[in-house]
Length: 244
Image (cartoon, rainbow, N blue to C red; front, side, top):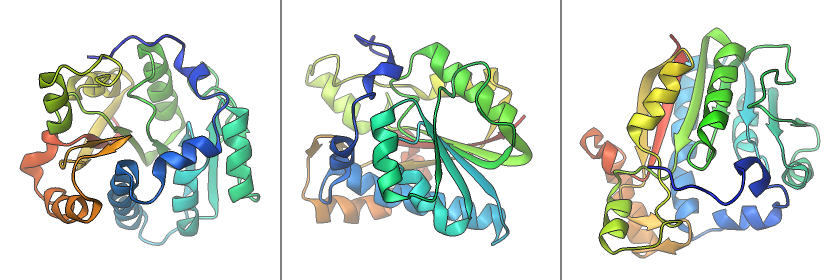
């Protein structure tokens, strides 16, 4: 399902920073999706940890959006990314958080401790198969026995949006997607299992386009995220994984 990219994914975000944050500006489709994603993440944290301390790592943390959300729930949150410019932006937002420059897909990631919660958002879709496998394997390695690994596929191949775009004959780059089967294969190969799947983005939209007015999309989405039968028609699948 994945469209071949012109460059290694590790190099594609090296010079991004504030421009990446603009993707989530208020009124955009990514902003809409994040409003629901962040609620799901909060629910996972509160139901799993119930107020007790936990250690969190965000992989491919970029400018720190996920760390910033998780931080109020724990004082042990850190991030890793290969892009110096993205990390510089993250440090301006949270100067007391450990943001580490490194390659989490490499055989020996720079961590000796294990984590209760590992997150990885907006990475797996565009990453090459060996990078997906490396990240998942290292997440399994660094996850505590009762810990949870949460990652997302923000362009589900079977979603309503991408069914419509394929039918309209849009170009290959716009149609770069990842299937549920591909995600399941990465999870299983890493020695992980799916504890739950949550969904966001049944209402059509892309990173650069809202197809319906924001208030209409938000209202419809608030209903759609509660209907499990619509799961595989959504753009964004969140996989909640445990050690197998």
